[in-house]
Image 1 (tube, one colour):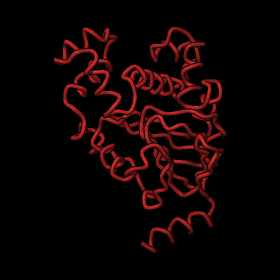
Image 2: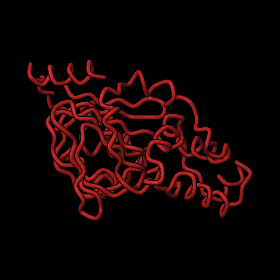
Image 3: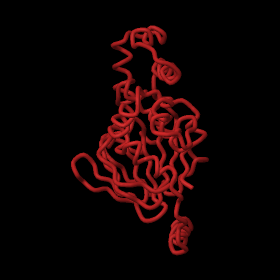
Length: 242
C-alpha cells in the first residue's frame, strides 16, 4: 500500500504520482524513482530527468506521472536540510540532479531530520516551533523570540526563502495529507489540517503541492505495484556498481 508518514523534520511518501500543475513546496523535495526515472519541468519549461532530483523550497516546478516513487519533503529548518543546501550550492533556485541519492531511505534522513539546523538563527527556530503548535500574531511572536516583526520577517525570507506564513500553510497541508491517508473525508481532512473549509484546503494544496485533495486522496490509498524482476536487477546492479 502507498505510505505517507510525518516524522520530526520531514515527511515521506512512497507510491505512484500523477501529473501535477506548477507549484512550490515550503520544504526541500527529494524525488527518487523506484522504477525508471523522475521527470520534472521547471518554471522556464526546461525538462529535468534523473533517478533522483532535489527541488529547493518554493522553486516552482511540475512533476510528471511516475509508477513508483520515494519522495521526501524535508523541513528547511532541520539539520538534513543543511546538507541539501550544500548539495544545491549556487543553484538554490533550480532543480538539481542527485543520482547518488537513489538509495536514500528514512533511516538515513531520520537522525538529522530530528536535529535543528546549525545555519538558521535560533530565534527563527523558536518562532517556527511556536507557530507549529498555535496561531500567534506576528507582533506577539516577534516579541516572544526577542526580535522586531520586521527583523523576524527578514530572517525568514533570507534563511528559509519564504515568509513564515507560507511555512505554516505547508505544515497544515502535511497534516491534511496525513488525514487523507488515514481515510478521513475531504471536509474532515481540511478541519484536521487547520483550514477554514474544503475549498480553502483545495486552493492551498493546488498552489503548494500541484494537486487537489480529491486527486491526492486516491493516490495515497492506491496499492503500490511490485517492481518487476528486471527492475529489481537494475537496482541491484546500480547498488553493486558503486
